[in-house]
Image: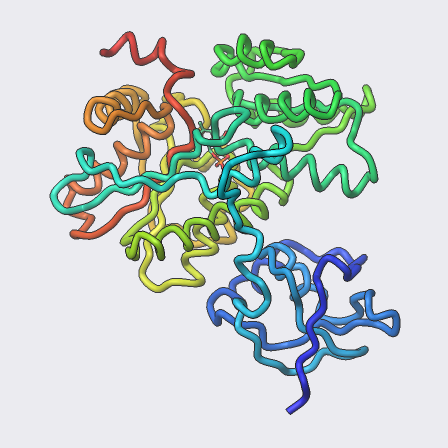
Length: 394
Ligand code: PLP
């Protein structure tokens, strides 16, 4: 047997573009086997990838530190992913001292996974992943804002000077914070249903345009053309694959380490669908790497609006590549009531889309669809942003 050569992934260059379905197929293969079974071929300079580009991209998306290489042609091999530094990037700062507010984001991960003992029903234990512990938007969207910005900056060689983005507030807050940190200008385009986000965005230094159109996806084309004519960068969270990638590399992988620590294997993971970035990555990861973890997406009922989530038929890029076990519909009233219930029972105030996720869990328990065991709910943000909604109903 040939000796195994490992190279640092960050030292390799892969100029060839690889289509998304091919990357996803390779990710599924790696995660379901838990190993890499072919090498990446490199040229004479030992740096340029010349063969097995899709495998290279998949490993890059999975955030490994090392990859197996061979000269000129791919070869058979066998390396467990753990030997490639699969978990190396997840090293939280022990004493929680951070060199700046950007490091405060990515060195603060994992976000907490907490058992909600009083919100758990009939032996179906709720574990909540609290994405409000991200520092800028107090939401899951800091992750994608940071990563889309980082990838664009790496591509350009410098940060862009001006950024335009359509947002239902949270991604906008993340990009406004990043723009302040790097001294750039940021303009957020809000749909009418998220007009309440204007004040917060302005406090963070963003210029805000509120559109009469109701959904963030309705604004994509307008924002693209405004950005083109003004020479602004448009990260476009709805179509930018960095959205899926960052949740695969960090959010999903964090969750694996956390369930190991908690000593549980969840029966199901439930989360809201907006761009579908976080739940598509979680579905891709957990369906490939574990047997029998069910994945459910949560959307507003027909005709209802819940900030951050929307109906599948409004168009979501990544959901078609992954397997979901069901999509659960929730009304604004149910989401609001459920968020207040969690505050009353477990002393944590979560956002409206988190309330929707908790309602979906309750509805499944009540319908006899969930057996006894552990259930993970992804809570995208905090309820402090929606206090007006909650006051009306408390
Ligand atoms: N919940 C809230 C509060 C959000 O802001 C978002 C996204 O904007 C989501 C849920 C949906 O997340 P994703 O875009 O990853 O599907």
